[in-house]
Amino acid sequence: MSTVKTILVIRLSSIGDIILSTPLLRELAVAFPDARIDYCTKALFAGLLAGNPRVHVLHTPVNPPSGSYDLVVDLQNNRRSRRIVRKIRAGKVVRYRKENWKKWLLVRFRMDFTGPYRSVPDRYRDALADFRVPGDTGGCELYPSPEERNYAASLSDSRNLRLAVCFGAMHASKRYPGQKFAGVLSLLFEALPLQAVLLGGPSDAPFAADILQALPEPFRGRVVDLSGRCTLMQTAAVLERCDGVLCNDTGLMHMASAFDKKLFVLFGSSVPAFGFLPYHAPYELFETAGLRCRPCSHIGRDVCPEGHFRCMHDLQEVAVAGKIMEYFSHARS
Image (cartoon, rainbow, N blue to C red; front, top):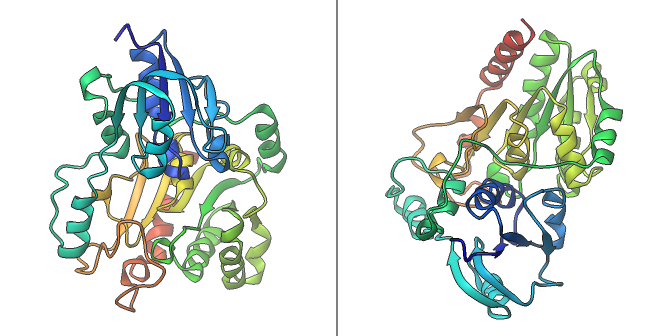
């Protein structure tokens, strides 16, 4: 282990997967205290790692790493990442085993060979089994800059509790319907001095409009819509200042987990067996158990293949709002 002086970690996408790699960066820094750790990811996501004290140099596929590395940790493990590895001199290369065959059997035949729950960061660590990199009890890490934290502070309202609502997702089968989000918020607004902050990327903005449209007019002034208006790390800084987070299975869920926020997580087509529950962060999971059609995909679908979308529609607004009220009641007492 003492011969490892240079390490390259590769994870090109996406938001959640990159954030879930940060515990491994911390563990590598402990296992190899004298090593330099570089990271290669897409430029779109580089901000997630820009302030990370474990990372020495950030590379992208457009400006790829060069030279030699004693150890390469390929967490992407696809043709793009292998192409990057071939262009450098690598002493030892280890790769994350995605075990997609297990996901395929679970989706296609409801045969679950995943075993006891293991999170993605734990599976990432498996790639380094030969090096005996020790795990720890810490969670994910993000480091907003002072400017990003100042941006979030300028939006804060100390008079009210603040609930972040991460309502988007790349695939529709992972999105709680806008009308149901509005139903949850209406119940909360009736009971609590609460401000809701809608967070998401530019592609999520139309769904924010759906939530606002479904909200009764008197409540709309208690919602701040930041979807499509923040950088990734401005979003992280806003999450850092929130009191709780209501979210789909999305990258922003993992972003919030980096600040140890209480998460209220809505799983539709997602299932815990895939390993993407919040890592070492407090959460309440809402899912419709017992549906034979679930999971219908390991990444999500654009439409419900059964046409009923029960995995999300059966998650009752009263139950979700009740858990959030219970949490805030205890937090304020």
